[in-house]
Length: 210
Ligand SMILES: Nc1ncnc2c1ncn2[C@@H]1O[C@H](COP(=O)(O)OP(=O)(O)OP(=O)(O)O)[C@@H](O)[C@H]1O
Image 1 (cartoon, rainbow, N blue to C red):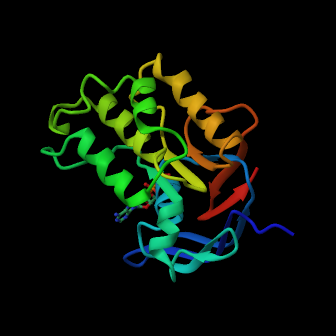
Image 2 (image 1 turned 90 degrees about the horizontal axis):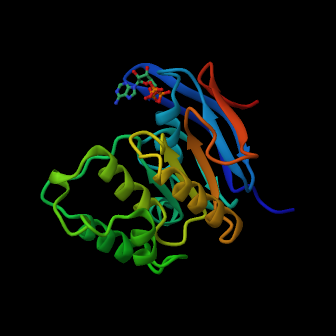
């Protein structure tokens, strides 16, 4: 039987003495998941834990073999994350970020220049990010989440600050990466990004399928 793409085992995340997440087990197979929950429920914390970006107790297995806590570098190579409100040092350019990601993530499924053109980033990608609007920053962070050859892409509030013309482009990228490249998505959003997404909810510190 095929392994689960993501398998959370006894995951507990606390900030100081306050337990924010307590997830005894959660198994996610290939799919597009839509993560719901009220303000402060723990959606962003869940995404950062699944991205392997913040410490937590327990473990997460990718494809049944790669442990987030024991093989963090390998794990993070295959799990991409775009945060809700991206922040980068002001002096760096979008192109610098793309070059850095290309170097660390390796050859991507899709040509980066093609995605730059698709998302309309060409006119500012060579400028320092200190001059970007929040929507421009958001587009760059989304582009970076689609670099390399991820097995999982986590998108935290990908729709906020994006203009209406960009929404269908993002939907297309998600569909393409899911259907053609076999990528599993977990997305927090106030509206579904794709039809047929599987709903999850952060409820009482746990993540449950609804
Ligand atoms: N760095 C931190 N230090 C301490 N507490 C934190 C930290 N980050 C988040 N929290 C707390 O963890 C809880 C969950 O926060 P989180 O940002 O994950 O919620 P969320 O569901 O994404 O909320 P929202 O919908 O408002 O963005 C909240 O009570 C928040 O105050």
